[in-house]
Length: 151
Image (tube, rainbow, N blue to C red):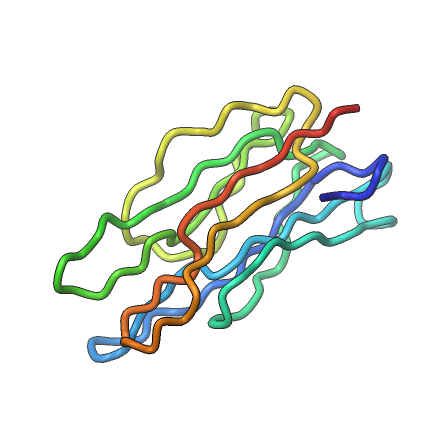
């Protein structure tokens, strides 16, 4: 959760790049919210729920003009039966001014419906992570939810 008085105005993601034909793809491994209070980037606090161990963090994407995140949508690849499963591949957020920010994730799968909007902005994050299985078909991040600010 963002500290009291802060709200999420940007995000970054942890992505493992494609691993090739014989590799095990996990795609999106984590999401961080970048919380601000007042002027952008002068007073920030980064919050992160549980993340997978693969990949690297992207540079943050910010809502314009001091706006804040209000809703999100996940890009999810359907189960692949006998193929390599990845689950969540990317995320996009909608800002308070209507701007949509899409993370630099992978293109497999489709974006789902937008979450219900947070009237006062997003202040927190929960993620569902599959722990490493050791079976050469790890997925890492499987689901997420944003928690709305109350004040």
